[in-house]
Length: 246
Image 1 (cartoon, rainbow, N blue to C red):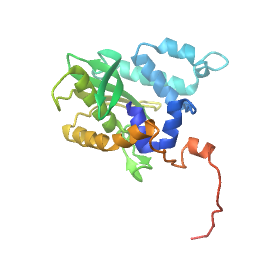
Image 2: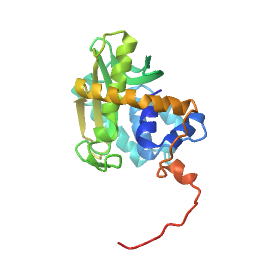
Image 3: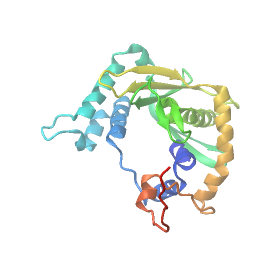
Image 4: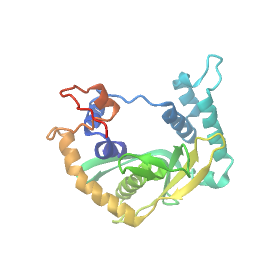
């Protein structure tokens, strides 16, 4: 299990998540997602490698396309801020595993600082202060909630605690360093370490895991959302929709 698997099953589409696991479906990254991946590659010290593996970043004249020039501005925005950079110090892309709620879990932390008892997630977003529509809750939420960062914080906090052999509820800090994809990027550091929220999310994980385990074992049939790109591409019509005004 991973954070992306969990949110895929619970908040997106069970059918799509199952075919992703079997390799029968691969989501193609959007430019916005690749911009975020590019910023992450900088933090991991793999910026040049990322450029070499993504020639689509460059024009025919071998210059960076506009979206990736903005990404460089985002990187500069962070590099020139000592406070933000202090939270990006530590072991990069560290992987930890643990058994949790009947399944093995794996996490990869953008930054793990053992001396500071801190995990840090680097997030890129359209806007730090703006609200965005979340179809799951039918309302406008912060980018933090849209990205399910509190859920990630809970998963990472518990897996890290278990992997490091600490007592129940002895969670490390989970921080978010955020930078916006704007011409003049905004930035902020958020502390996501809320024991009450973490405990509530973990209770939800425990309740949801039996179905996810059954789905992955082939004991339950996955539900289709009929809204995602996978469901649209595999939809088979079986009825006429009666149209009416009003």
